[in-house]
Image (cartoon, rainbow, N blue to C red; front, side, top):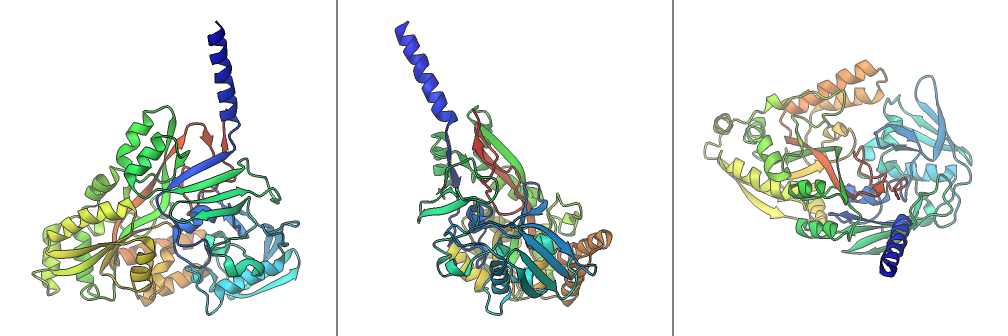
Length: 489
């Protein structure tokens, strides 16, 4: 009886200790190149810092809604060109300096400056001026009305930073969020601690660690051993059924904004010929890629738009899987025997696994690919900034980012004046019905121009400890928002 009582007491102590858990370890596959979300395109940065460390005037909620952030309210002029933001008072940055309207002026002026390295500089192009009316009031004047301005200000690229800490932002990010940066053990983990001086609702967690595990087999072992409390965007979907059958875990299966594409260098011969781009698209069996690389998780797409968006148009029929038609198009374009090109693959499993399948599919129509497996820093240098690729595979996880096709300097180098005019019109249009029609037109143009090979919408499958609550099921933006995450009893 005594041993039974001791065992029961030990169990009670263990249970109480578990219920009192106030830290979390999140497994991730991709480590960020640095921690400044305002100067790089890597989504791995926002996964760590969005909402946790840095905040913007507005922010995305878990359902994609645009919510107040550092701005508690705003007024919009009748003509839609002047936004007057009322800021929360009593807000401090993690280094103790005060957050004021001048920091908003600094941040937005820095993002739109001529020498800005912001990866989404186009978000700020319509800003004519930013003025601090007083310490808690900012007036932003636009050159023309923008129906998406508050949405744009919710992006991670638009977070508010301070001039006092900008010099070391890449290694020591200082924001206003519910967590403070603690430590970066490069190649291993990034740690955060709760900001006890946070202006809003304090986080339930006292600390959080993002643990980087690049290999799917190691990710499986870490989850099974409970070395991580959750693995966000789990990289080996073939294991999900096993986790679903294990009561220790919950498998979250949601939507992302991630249009996974076979990106084509539109300025590089022979891809400057629409017939060649169309042939590439028609050589691709989307479902075979979803089944083979993603174990059935993913939705086929025919354009650069999320299927869950109410304005989505299903254009998969523009490029049906038809290898014989693809061969005929190549012959018509002057490549009856095909050609050789590069296929540069970043680390995610959708790219590495999908790349092998696509290479085999392209080989069937005479296109040989020289595959290079790159780390993210190499991919950003060679493909994204250097245009040094023929084909590459990447998932664009930014929210509703079809506007990138209006930027001829963007890495796939698509240059279409008609499309650029359409996106410009969309930017100043406020009528919902007209905006929907413009978005449908935009989707159709790039689909019929076969700018890229449109593959599938990336599903978000995360494995989470069954007692951990608050992890987003969907990914309306590139974020692992820990501000509402907690442990249940």
